[in-house]
Image (cartoon, rainbow, N blue to C red):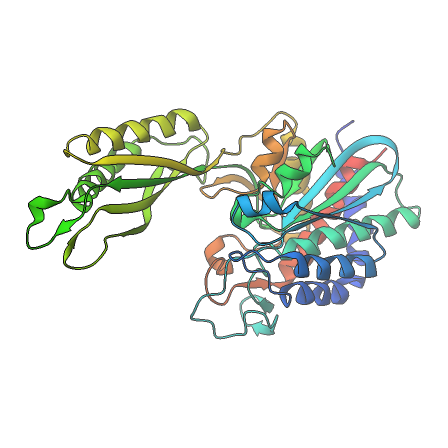
Length: 427
């Protein structure tokens, strides 16, 4: 495949812009309908919202393949039900297959909202224009709309004979990102339902993300022996031992802060204790304390080595307390996303077209989060993140109250993705 010239890029931009604009009111209605279908995870009861998305896609003229995930696999990740949706469109014979992946499950709304989290209200922001509010509107139900209407624009472009394309585009819409992605993208690839040559996953509009952190979630359980609080020597205090382990963990943060990533947007590894529980009653020596650790892993680190180092630190700290037993259980190990050969083709095309439609340069960076994109990269598929959204997660109020999306960014991202696909599939 030869690289596109500036003239080719301008031609695709000019041809696709009016198609995206003509369908944009319908695209906003599509996004609103997806936002209004609650898909909180937990609890992860996601069959009904997947059916809503399927119906909406079929109304656009797409043939939708629906794959309910078997119950044992769903239960293993702590969900109730999940369905993966795949749309495939073949242009001319030959050429690459490009997958577009976004997730429809969302974190629960929580408190503090000034708008209905399932209302998809559109308000005018003096700084950003029309803005839609709702849980998942930016992360990442927005890219159900971005990708569906980018593909639709490309189909219209082909029908108008303004482009000769070869290859295929697939939409992979999944519902388990908040549980780790194992029964979404990873399941699709493991079941050999798809084997794309490239993948573009949900992201934001003003930068292409080509790397991100990995993450280890580790559960630590400290076992002691209960005793009466009036005679604490009669028991073995699990909380005292847990406190010693926690002190060792927090002291280790300083060494982590000295390990810096070379990737812009990613700084150093982090460690956080997010959950803790234990004890029986106020007047009982606690016999069990459990807590969970979130350890972010930069792309330059080896995830297995990071996990082994953490195990060693915890077990050494626990060994200082007589009579206790320390149990470790991996809850999640998400690999970092690393840039693979070929990903630069996606990045450069998205940057070129994104700058045209946004009117500002589109950078390339890494992020400290972890995403479903890692599953495509782990399968050897060049993968980047790009979609509809502002410059930062904080601007979108992602995973916070009043999550929002500027509709102008949705339009620009849709045109950018469509033009990128056109360039990559051009004969």
